[in-house]
Length: 127
Image (cartoon, rainbow, N blue to C red; front, side, top):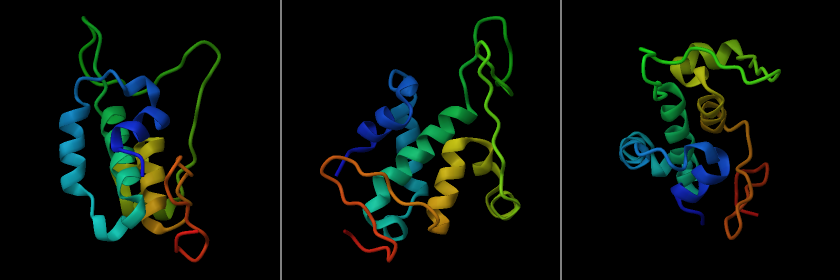
């Protein structure tokens, strides 16, 4: 099973050097149920940490406040939020990591295969 740090590196490599990972991991661990996620526990924590980092970006000097939109060159991303998830999970739907966590909670996505880790089949049992 991969560690939370390994999963964060795979999910969002740009966050690996963020000095807040340890603190956010501690908070995310307190907010995440091992019983609910089972074999996906570390994955759920990693998604929650990435969501927290995305929701609390560091700002550059002279730029107060959080970043509300971002575009790099000609690349722009937009996400469609299913109304059911938006109503039920609110803030989680504000980042792609949070949306993936909400879908994981709902049981609508499969865990990614991580070297040495289990992969769920449609019945929810290990392969």
